[in-house]
Length: 264
Ligand SMILES: Cc1cc2nc3c(=O)[nH]c(=O)nc-3n(C[C@H](O)[C@H](O)[C@H](O)COP(=O)(O)OP(=O)(O)OC[C@H]3O[C@@H](n4cnc5c(N)ncnc54)[C@H](O)[C@@H]3O)c2cc1C
Ligand SMILES: NC(=O)c1ccc[n+]([C@@H]2O[C@H](COP(=O)([O-])OP(=O)(O)OC[C@H]3O[C@@H](n4cnc5c(N)ncnc54)[C@H](OP(=O)(O)O)[C@@H]3O)[C@@H](O)[C@H]2O)c1
Image (cartoon, rainbow, N blue to C red; front, side, top):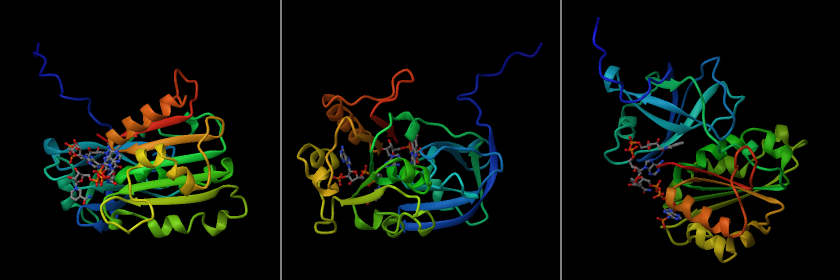
């Protein structure tokens, strides 16, 4: 009988091989890209999947949030190149027509159905944490189900305000008749004084009331639902702060008022 080989380091990813359709460089270290979508690939806005780059045993897999809408016939992602990162340094090799491994499944809990019904949906993001909120905003559902959508995007430099023009033009004309919600977009540039009206970090702006003032609406347990995505320290401090105000995450299937996704 053969002796069993060493256990695999991690479960094999069941994936399809997709092809890159488009690449957009926002800065030398920030890019978004589209690839072909397998016919059977299903996801909910806010989900992530796993992407694979490199050939054979050298292939590296990492989780990436979908930025495209469930109705799009392509998949889209945004990524920052982290110096020395095993996966993200390989993004340099991404070319139109090149191969990209895509996990067959989508995952995660940063979806609107994790939240109790509410009137206002606050989407608080840093850096590439904008991604899942693009998917949510590119789908008509939230526009029908909320009264106010507040998108906060904190970046170091103005050039990292990805999709700024598209966000400012939302909702698309085709949905305007049925879209109940108003969008308030609050970009925050923290390292370029004067680039945006708000320039402090999100937790400070929330604690001293400036974020609510800029949004033109207060945050309340009864009406507000909050989603946070990106930097883990940002997520931790907002979770602690909102926890003291009585907000909870989904617990054992009981929807709460807040949801988080940490990227590292
Ligand atoms: C659920 C989930 C969804 C994710 N979605 C995205 C996404 O949509 N876009 C994306 O760029 N990354 C995303 N990430 C992070 C991504 O999976 C990788 O960590 C990232 O690409 C770096 O991989 P790496 O191998 O190059 O370096 P790693 O060894 O994985 O990371 C090295 C370090 O880089 C920093 N870092 C990693 N990711 C980021 C980031 N996104 N922004 C700022 N600093 C970072 C951290 O300090 C981390 O410790 C997600 C992570 C999770 C858990
Ligand atoms: N952005 C760049 O110019 C750049 C260039 C090359 C490489 N990189 C690499 O890319 C990675 C990610 O950079 P990134 O700029 O996308 O992500 P980031 O460092 O998480 O910064 C994104 C935004 O989040 C804010 N932020 C950071 N920590 C926070 C906290 N604890 N609480 C609240 N807000 C917080 C930042 O404000 P502050 O400005 O106050 O920190 C910034 O506005 C890093 O590993 C970096 O080495 C970045």
